Amino acid sequence: MNRTKLTATVTLALLVASALPAVAFASDKKKDQLADARKLTPAQNALIDKAIAREAVIIKVLKERVPLVETYIQNMRPDPVMGQVPDSDVHFLARVDFGRVIGQTAFSSGSASKKGSFKASFGYITGLSRNLHLSYNDAGFVRMIVIDSTGFDRKNYTFSFLRNDLLGSVPCAVFDVAPVKKAPGRFFGRIWVERTGGNIVQYNGDLAGSEKDNINEYFHFNSIRSNVQDNLWLPTSSYIEETDPKSPSHTLRFKAINHIWGYSLKVPAKDSDETDLEVVGATDESQQGADLSPLGAQRAWIQQAEDNVIERLYTAGLIDAPSDFDKTLAQLANNILIYNGVQIDRPIRVRTLLTVPLESLSVGNTILLSKGMIDTSAVVTADGAQQLGNLNALLAYQVAHIVMGHHIDTKYAFSDRLLFPSQSAFQKLPLHHTDAEDLEAAKKAVELLGVKDLADGEQYFGLYLQQLQARQKGLKALNDPQLGDSLIKPDGTFWMQAMIAKAPKLNNTDLKQVAAVPLSSYLRFDPWTDQVIKLNVVPEILLSARDKLPFEITPISSKLSYWKPPVDPAAAPATAAAPATAPAQ
Image 1 (cartoon, one colour):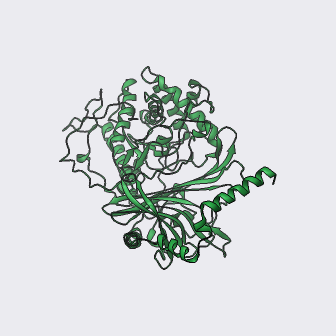
Image 2 (cartoon, helix red, strand yellow):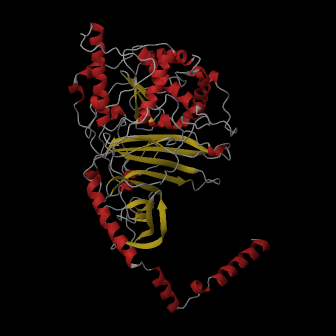
Image 3 (cartoon, helix red, strand yellow):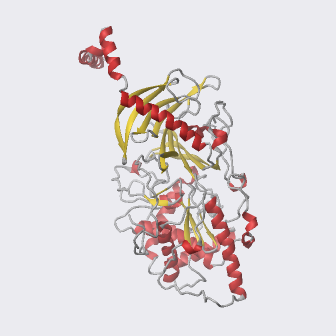
């Protein structure tokens, strides 16, 4: 150490000593006074007791549930321009029987992930078959759904009040929590307790490891709960990350996100309860009272298969409940037909697939777009043109499948084909199209997008594909569809490769050019009703290329709110139909 550094160190030490004499050199009496000052007040003690009691209730409720749990992991590497980028990724999705998972105390190493980075804390209960890509092989992250299922009490933990806080509209008291004695699985960290009901609504930290398994500690996480019913807060998401200790630039070793939903049994709305979609230029061909022609009977049979599959995907928790956002997407899809002067037998419907991987599919005349695809293409601009151009292109690909007659296997018109329990093994649903059909649809989609009303948006989707191409090597799991069609051909190029030539060249250093955005940028969904909701996000100013984060996982938001009873549609005032334009920014 040189003289300058030594002088600075000594000066700093003297300043600390002089500024904190009562702490550094306090008498025993003074120490006792400080200890008394840190004791919880009667109100704080009462709130902790309430939180412990509520946590026991939450664990009991969870043990009665079999929700869907999705985990997406990105292993990171340094990048000279973007700071860091995904080097590889892993995706898991399963319906989990919490009654068989929660409460297990063994922390065995279990099976590692594909990268060998994750030691499972205990076995995961898989509910969906491997053939459908819906199996969860690594269970370590599920431990983060409850703080401590075997001993969250005053006997095992100490609590220190830190401050009061406001998470969204929920007033909270914040406490630091530490185990009295270190033991495998005990929680170290911080909890946010809502002051009204004593529920723990957020907590972050990590879990103690086990010397037997040679694990000092588990990964750090931040877990969020949502108020899904009156005084019931259930875990809905967790963000996990770890920094590479060998990285001089503090590059993350990995980051991951957990999503949990499908807590309640889904009961599809009857056709009579659904709002009809009114599209300009559409004609009513129902011909009530008329007999069906042979072609009409064939189309009705295809629609029966479509309705059966859509209902089954909904009750399984894989697609959202019908929403206003879906109606807007349906208007966009039907307008593609109108702009091209194409008529089909009935209007197109659109629903959202609630999963991360980038995929789309058409089931009869219903188009499904994945939440990950909608989120990453939702680039905010002043006029909304970029998001609109991307959505039109994504929809056009499946509109083309519908126009070309690439319909679902009509064996699903027989309802017994889909009579299998959601919490048990799903049979593989062959909803994806063949390579020949995808190639045919891609050519047709380019033709549909070439009309005057849509051509200006092609450049944006071409830019989106370029950004995906630049990240493609490190995002194989993100591009592996669960049910439907990928954007990528088997040879690594895109089905709609022709769009790239219509776009400007990708330039990551240009802060005015944003080709794609992070996951979870545009939609969230209610974990109880599975209805998607548009986020009310104010765009951030980009300071460098590192702020772009295309297709990446980012920390979860903790803007919480209290549950409100659903409004009775019969009592609600009538509202005007949403315009057939891009979703509101």
